[in-house]
Length: 276
View (tube, rainbow, N blue to C red):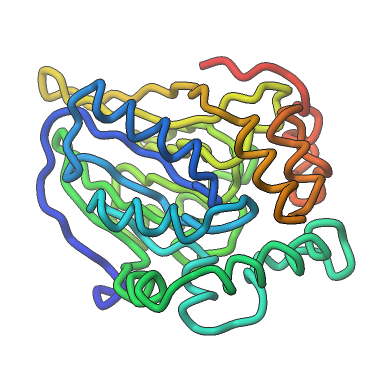
């Protein structure tokens, strides 16, 4: 494992809050901070799986809030692209497809709003975090260990996931990027995706998603939770700034404008409630 891009944070104890995909959605970020406060979870037990910045209206506010909060964060593909001065988000969207065209609107907007201080902070982020928790070795990554922009879903072949466990020598992988919350367990290995807080999970609900890990009685456990937040304000701010109407609409409908990144199984689940 590439140790130069990996931050080791030791052995954590107590509940851990996991979330990611803030996507410049400041209202959702405020809501998840209140969750942490209400549960009395300290910053050293909070993990952000990347992509603080993306589709929504307040990239600078979100970066500065995360920086001030001083939680554990890894670089998502957006952070990597912005800090390297690249011209797109590196999601490998289909050229000319809807996601590709919309990224040509929100990505330069986000670039233009970020201060040097925020970009310097992005340079400080590791690509991976490793820790010990409830006797398990845990790795935090964004897409996959081999490609930060790789979309890995629940339906993705377990062999692909197993390669990540082998490369990182992990029992648990906390991942992000794909935008959908899910868990999968095989051979005493756990692939856990908290989902994202910046956009709904394509399930016809305005709620977004996060996870809580627990080590009560030294037993590893986890649970997904949905999160309500002020989506109306987030949507209004996007429209005021002429950001993509399709993404602004998604905040209200809970449905993605398109499913071009999704495998067939996940596409068929559009508009269906998520239960854990």
